[in-house]
Amino acid sequence: MACRFGFSSLFHQVKRNRPFLAFDRIKRWSSSSSSSSSTVFRQRIFDLEKHGIGGLSVEFADLFRSAFATRLFPPDMTDKLGFKHVKGVLLHGPPGTGKTLMASQVGKILDGIEPKFFNAYDLLEESVTVIDLFKDAELKPWSSKKDDSQLHVIILDEIDALYKQRGLTEQIASRIKQSGDDDSKFREQICDGHVLCVRFKRTVSRQLLEKMDAVKPLNNILIIGTTNRKDLIDLELLRPGRFDVQIEISLPDENSRLQILRIHTKNLKRNSFLGRDVSLSELAARTQNYSGAELEAVVNSAVSCALNKLISLHDVEDTERLQENSVKVTRNDFLNAIRKIVPASVDVVESLRPNGMVQGSDQYQEPLHAEAIYPRKKKKNFTRSWIFLLRFVSEKVVIEVLQL
Ligand SMILES: Nc1ncnc2c1ncn2[C@@H]1O[C@H](COP(=O)(O)OP(=O)(O)OP(=O)(O)O)[C@@H](O)[C@H]1O
Image 1 (cartoon, rainbow, N blue to C red):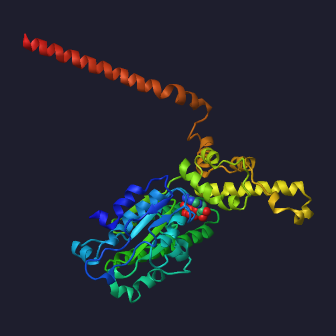
Image 2 (cartoon, rainbow, N blue to C red):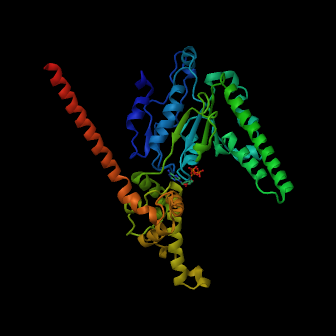
Image 3 (cartoon, helix red, strand yellow):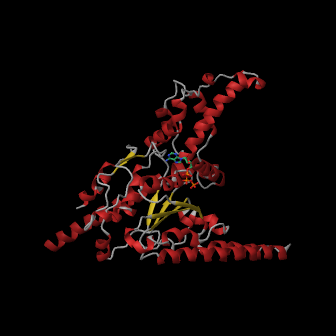
């Protein structure tokens, strides 16, 4: 049955190395008339790299499998089954790994209405309201068409701004209030303002959850939230029926980095600005722990290096005489850029180091590395084997005695 809808082939074809998604049969299955049979995906083969997305084919496949596969089944069948489609997907992972990029490209894959894009701060700053988010999906004729209406995808970037765990901000406010007594009136005012903001935020986030719960009969809404702080998000948001599908977008592996570098050097290559000595595979190997955004920054920085060289060669006033074809971004420019741009993940580890959280100060390093861990483990095993041997021998002795 699954083959009929083409999703089994989607699961098998998607490998991290492949920069495309393939949908075998893209028509929504119809049990009655052909009129309700509509396509879900725009193309049979969707080339992610062509759309500027590197190394996220597995995550995309996950997203489509969990959020869209069930929408290929006829609505009356899902109705009979009492099946509820996924209403919320949370994309989470380190900053700059392409969560927003991925969410914004969903519309290009789907054959439907362009997704609406919002930032959670838009809601907090009151430039949009929760009602605005759902307005289109609730408008006729969609609401009257129920399951046959096209899917409305709402993207809510930085959703953690709305759903940070409740206690956190209030605890901070009360702690500020209690600390010290100078300027206490001013401090109190700040804290009260802060608490008011928190209350407003809670009202907005409640409204959104209520809307999500209320859209049940429409079944034509999917909210994609993105965050790089899933650890701070209130569990009520992740409850089943809300954002119950969570997809992690992690740092790219070597192959994904190669795809991302190819994407961001495409123009350089097309216009012959890329030096012959540049090997993207080598750069991909050298950029472990770099996010997609950081790889883009490396390319930018390499270009800026190449341009700076030209400016220093010519008179600054004489830039008009610069020939376009004299611009070459070389391997050295890329290596300089890699040296300059330190990946944030490494930066975080480095920032912890002086506080002793990673390596510890000198006096603790020695026992931690050499003595403390390994021999203790060894001793434990040694003791354990003695206990085991003694137990074995004593059991043998008891058996022998009993047999006597
Ligand atoms: N996988 C990728 N393929 C190609 N480009 C990427 C990729 N990931 C990131 N980039 C580049 O980095 C830019 C920033 O990425 P994006 O905003 O999607 O990251 P994010 O994960 O949403 O970050 P944050 O959590 O900080 O919002 C993108 O516009 C794109 O140019």
